[in-house]
Amino acid sequence: QVQLQQSGAELARPGASVKMSCKASGYMFTTYTIHWVKQRPGQGLDWIGYINPSSGFTNYNQKFKDKATLAADKSSTTAYMQLNSLTSEDSAVYYCTRRIDPDAMDFWGQGTSVTVSS
Amino acid sequence: DVVMTQTPLSLPVSLGDQASISCRSSQSLVHSNGNTYLHWYLQKPGQSPKLLIYKISKRFSGVPDRFSGSGSGTDFTLKISRVEAEDLGVYFCSQSTHVPPTFGGGTKLEIK
Image (cartoon, rainbow over all chains, first blue to last red; front, side, top):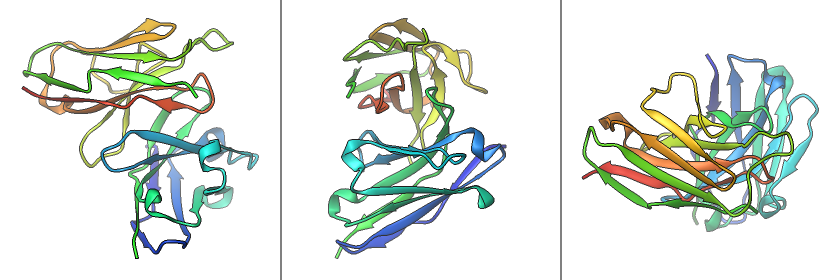
């Protein structure tokens, strides 16, 4: 069955970076793009960007282009997102999800919680 | 960016009732390929969003037929014919016709 298994919660200092992972299984990794979505507590969903694991092509929401860096490793079927220069505004749950563009994001990871605090 | 506006914000219902959620987009969601990429998700407390309906009215694998979607252009509706306890949570509409994909603010379905 399709699974997107995300890495565990992160606690980071302001100004630091975090790198989270999303391990895909149960389907052909290179067939779907991997998207990342941010959700602040009690708030809606914000699209960060996506990576095409087959080509390595990335596309970012302008809001996040200086904040997030996406990568993917075909050999381990794992996608990664690094967030840099963390502030309290980056405290949120981050989800990875897959898609055949431009259709729906059909399966989602369980989320990685990031807390930025001194 | 396309703004997705959902109403109501909160929807108190009794079990067995019908529920209806509206979603309006700031521009047409008809893609150049003729499809309309409007989708509905349910997020239960402490869980990730789960896809219910894609392309306006297609139920995702395993979704009960009490869920139905309709609409066109900029106006869309999700209906739940007989609400069950497992249906409670926050419903989001989303569009992927335009880049970036965007989501509605959510509608919380709760017990009256």
